[in-house]
Amino acid sequence: MNAELSENKQAETAIAETAAAETAAAGTAQWEFIDSGFNTGRFNMDFDLELVERCKNENISFLRFYRWKPYAISLGYNQTKFTAGHKIDTEKCKTDGIDIVDRPTGGRAVLHSEELTYSVITKSDDAVHEMYRKISLALLNGLKLIEPENTELQELSFTKEMPDLLKLAKTGMYNLCFNTSIKNEINFKGKKLVGSAQRKFSGIVLQHGSVLIGKHHENIVSYLLTDEKVKDKLKKEIEQKTTCLNDILKRTVSYEETASALLKGFEKTLNISFK
Image 1 (cartoon, rainbow, N blue to C red):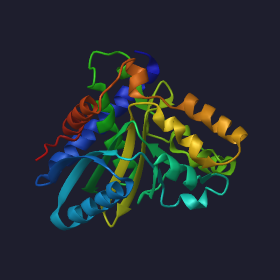
Image 2 (image 1 turned 90 degrees about the vertical axis):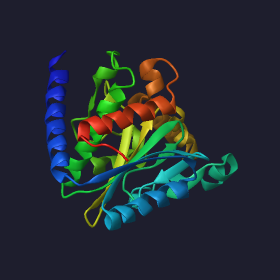
Image 3 (image 1 turned 90 degrees about the horizontal axis):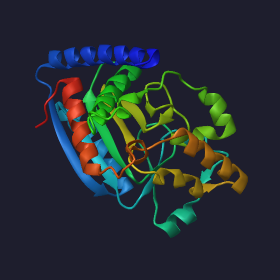
């Protein structure tokens, strides 16, 4: 194990110990797991908000896995501030049967297709970045359980640096989720595998994100209203900076095995059991 991987492992262990201790201290906190399967973009975003209300009123935390039918492009709630250069081609989306939906969280445009989408809804007094790291660690540990003996999967790690988001916004690179990694997102050898966004609602954390299984997310460039030269540049960016489970494991990875491994990762890392 090289020095960088060793350093990552030490950091991950520390986060896991803290997360488990805090979860155990919560005592009576209840967690519910939901796999809601395929639904439209609007349903998926509305359902996450419904779970925020349930968490607030019933003191239950939720982990949800879901999928998208039809495929959908989701936009961060504040993304209009950054999208002057690249708008979504709504007519092409309509022709191709692609939903467009606003997310209640921040972040950038994502084409939801060959992926497992997760959401975590829970009460927390943690700073946003701390809760983000804990959830990311649960995801990281879960992904490694898809093939526990696979040495490639053990190279999954956290992105260490935070990019200059204002600079990216000016260049247009900020508009797509998967052409830039932020701190504590999960990557494989420097390529982004999981993209997440978070928002707090009066003490209730909603974090959701995409775990890439296949490569179809790269096609988001086709739905931008910009010239072909810019599209080519963005296409190369997203191809160079992202990966997926199918490519890492060099086989077709199923949604079901991904979901099973991630569920175990949350149970183990956060020391919780689901009803």
